[in-house]
Length: 259
Ligand SMILES: Nc1nc2c(c(=O)[nH]1)N[C@H]1C(S)=C(S)[C@@H](COP(=O)(O)O)O[C@H]1N2
Ligand SMILES: [Mo]
Image (tube, rainbow, N blue to C red; front, side, top):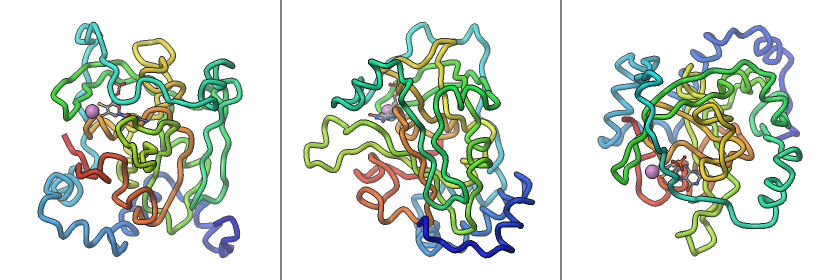
């Protein structure tokens, strides 16, 4: 992908693009993608259709007050990624950790925690809903994903944002269990979609996804990828994991997990 030839005209257009037009461009490109067409044809994607096609794409998830915070926010799924690499990151307090942003971008990035902390931050108190039947209200602070994507500058072919995580999920014993998730460009540029660095005013614990996790507030718990190491911009989801856009979508759950 790094050998991509970017026509000069396109580069200029990208440089001039406002967030708004980048988003609109994203929608147009999305509706042309072949696997996206097949996806929309499926009747079970009704929440996706209604949010995306009936103009609710920019609606906000409900935000709560400090008084509503849950006394305990459960840890679910992976509690700590296995392996020496992650252990070494914890040991050094994530000083050697870098968030890689690559794929269909003009400018691949390697961002340290300090780099992310220097970007604009957003705080939101929202309710997390897990399919396993529990919910918790938490206060998340982090960098709007849009701010990172603007710095990397999307190439015209980019349609999906894929989050690659540090953990193999424990129940996947067949070796294909690397946790990952993905969202479309509408959610990627949504104001409540943030790369969270803290929960309830404290840096993320290992249980909650240290040092960085996704919050995509209009979707269910399994979309909220913990331990994000790499963000990849892609044209399609079919050649990642088992091809359905996420660890749980690969195992039968909805890719668009609208609440
Ligand atoms: N990397 C990674 N992200 C993940 C999971 C996981 O196992 N690994 N579990 C998901 C599920 S099902 C839920 S409900 C939430 C749980 O987040 P929490 O542990 O902060 O409550 O993380 C989601 N993101
Ligand atoms: Mo979940």
